[in-house]
Image (cartoon, rainbow, N blue to C red; front, side):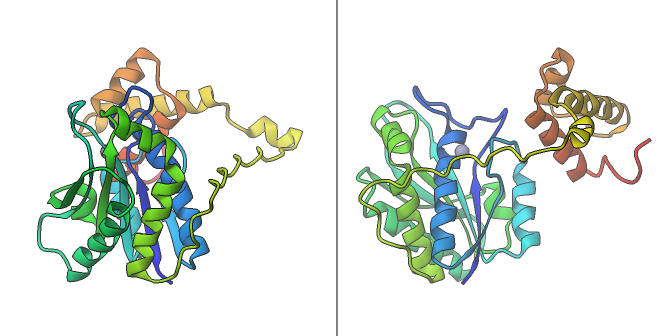
Length: 266
Ligand SMILES: [Zn+2]
């Protein structure tokens, strides 16, 4: 049994790469949620950087895995280039890595390459933040090119299979065994019903707009004080009054990360 951290890339205002029919952030979240279920059924403990459409900065993803004490880190992405580019590839960090890291990459890579039926672009290395800043064996998977029409069909229509092959690769290295693929795809779990709240609780529940407004107030004060201004994407949304709840949460994450929010509120 191992502690496995699954990191579906991007989220919220960061869609990742955009195809004709889908967005990277949605495709990788679907695979990540199925992968979690499969790995838990195989006896592992799983934590995800995100299980909904929220924005989480790259360094926060790595520090979440580090502070949890993950044994393995797997980041899920879709590739993008010209319409002609196609294929599957995996990455580990370009700097010195533990020998376990390349073994972990090889296991995942082989399991997916054996089934995915598109070009194998190889086991690669790159200086990506989540690979650099994580302390455990970490692999980033680029399943296929969202910019290529038939690759994108795989990303959209083979969620169950992508999760299955990835789980087979992870367990080949980390132990445990995944059940053979179901002949029919298992439907995704329905979203949990909203919790029932009493009338009294309802009174204190902040509305989405109240939350965004109070976040905006905090961010405006930070902007006046902080040595690093807000990220431009949030500043524009703030000024345009277009900040969403997930943007607000993302902005607060970053402010916390940079130590702009400490101690008691003013
Ligand atoms: Zn990506």
